Image (cartoon, rainbow, N blue to C red):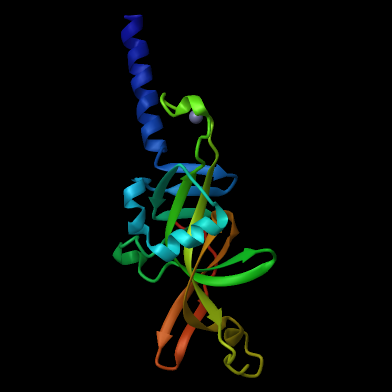
Length: 203
Ligand SMILES: [Zn+2]
């Protein structure tokens, strides 16, 4: 009887583990949401050449790669362009900070990369080494336009709108560098980013 009880317990633990595996906390306050999709070496081209180049600027080599569509940073859920839910449209424009500089961009997708094992004995045998993983958002950069909206009697609302220009430049930014979510509004007079109140969102 005891064995069936312990079996039930381990089944329960398994269930909890598998439901939890959909969310991975990579550091305090930073989570991977949803499933990870393994990208094999010969599928890497599907990520896109400039995306791979951007990633290599941050991590020159890797062993394994996965892609994912959503993350959560400091209580805010961030989507990506590949996350095609109707409610998530136009929900992947962000600001980020690297080296104390703020940049803007649209998140195309997220990737997880695991470092390559260089142990000679692992070449023939299954590798059980502890390998470091890094997590990046692949962003298409939006640059701040030189002409901004004139400040209308210093009305606060205008200060919350940034005029930007699209570029084809792609960068890989560590998840924890993502700072704020913006609404991208593209109209005939230009492309504008509007601050959204940062709020805790349900997924
Ligand atoms: Zn190894």
